[in-house]
Image (tube, rainbow, N blue to C red):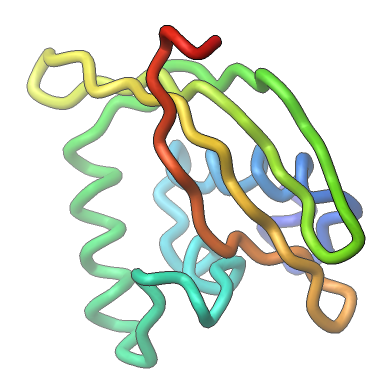
Length: 120
């Protein structure tokens, strides 16, 4: 919760966990605030973006977050995770390798690629 109230995430992993919690808690402003400006979903139309996130949150049950692996290099941190989700009683879980970049002391979610479970 301190991150949701404005504290900077000390690590990309903590940002990842706080973003998942933000979806659970329906905090679209936090999702927008912690998304990198190079992300494909980033837009300056924050009202519309927040509305879309809110709809996604309303339609989704966020059941579990499992961290599979973390890694880093000079410029980026990577977090591979499994998000267990349901929509309309259908399993829409996925595994993603997310990329985070630290800009001006703040970690931001840059992008992610979906992985097949067989690779795990």
